[in-house]
Length: 253
Image 1 (cartoon, rainbow, N blue to C red):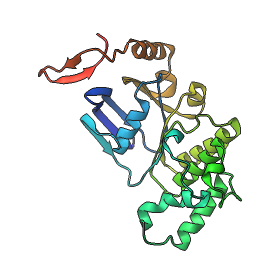
Image 2 (image 1 turned 30 degrees about the vertical axis):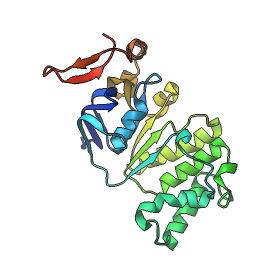
Image 3 (image 1 turned 180 degrees about the vertical axis):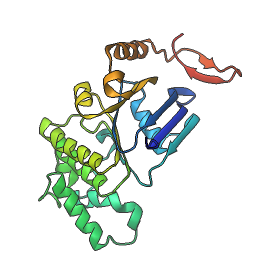
Image 4 (image 1 turned 90 degrees about the horizontal axis):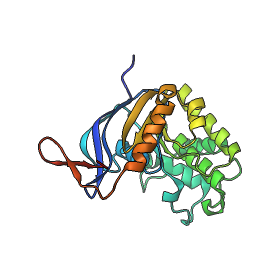
């Protein structure tokens, strides 16, 4: 068995000493599709950002074997009012290679055009991004990820508010990544889609309920437990303490 792409050991992420996720230990298999699921407010997006280093983890350790990591955030986090074209938005996927002052080389331009075609947006290259539908803009974001040529791809709600045709097309891109031995981790809400398309899953409810093969993780018992834990969470509860007396996390007692 190959080493995992990501290993989380006792990871806790806090905002103002209020843990959003706490004491999560799990392994993300390499070259596999893994879904992160759970009720609203379960800490799924926070966990994804912790994997990227976008939020500091207060405790624990995150080990990542990937040379290149690509991230697709939720659309709500992106300002689409900036006057930029589809082509230039996709080309930003190569920013880390040519930086803010060096020009993109011919290969970068070719790869950006090919990525736009691959997501079904040929002919949209010069369209301003603020004129696109939600589904069209999501295709742009996938194209930007495509040209990053990453070993590890992290997707935060990639199919939210997207039409079924676009979901099918973008899921084809995700499946292609798998055939190319890339590791994909996606925060998702559609459990039927997770069962069909994602062999591995993490079920969250601020803490890890279960991880492993999707069929086992999404058992009725686990889903009921996750829902109950999410409903029982009390933001006003006092901080729990570790055996040393230090604050650890907050939850309903």
